[in-house]
Image 1 (cartoon, helix red, strand yellow):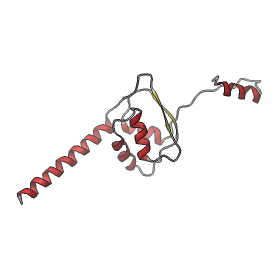
Image 2 (image 1 turned 90 degrees about the vertical axis):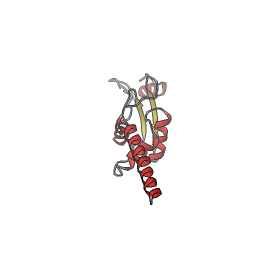
Image 3 (image 1 turned 135 degrees about the horizontal axis):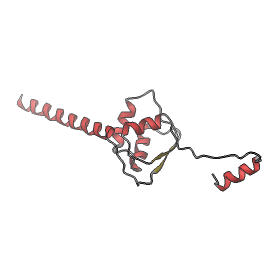
Length: 129
């Protein structure tokens, strides 16, 4: 009986430690990338697990597992494909909501009055935007 109590206590401590580690990973800002920022491409149809992997690999989130579990807690929210730019430390939950809401990086492009579609195509191909 004494061994059972010790075992249950040990399991409870491990579960509590794991929960605390995940909570910390999602609620405290983290920046594991350069000060200039990092672009992250989320491909269409990517799973929550793969998105967590990409974000961890690029230094955006502290833990891919904590991100995946947080994402699974919001099953009605799908992660949106696109190119995201991260330039400051964010909490894991803020990163999740940025990707879930599709706040992708948008490159400004100006079409001046009088330009033809050929002029616009040339500028786009040359990357002049």
